[in-house]
Image (tube, rainbow, N blue to C red; front, side, top):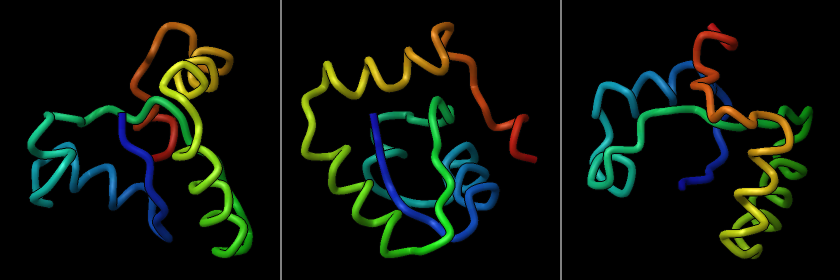
Length: 79
């Protein structure tokens, strides 16, 4: 699982899906959007990202499964 902050979610997911960014997501073949949150302020988004990253793997799985129990790729929902 990967969490991050971006000002352009559509572009960032496209980059990950097409392996245009070297690093964690490319190395581990992470190319599906399973969960996202929208914030008006970047500072709020960064704070939330830190909160999510500080949680256990189990808490991250629960977060995703509450809103996306079938683990659908949500990319088409945002384009």
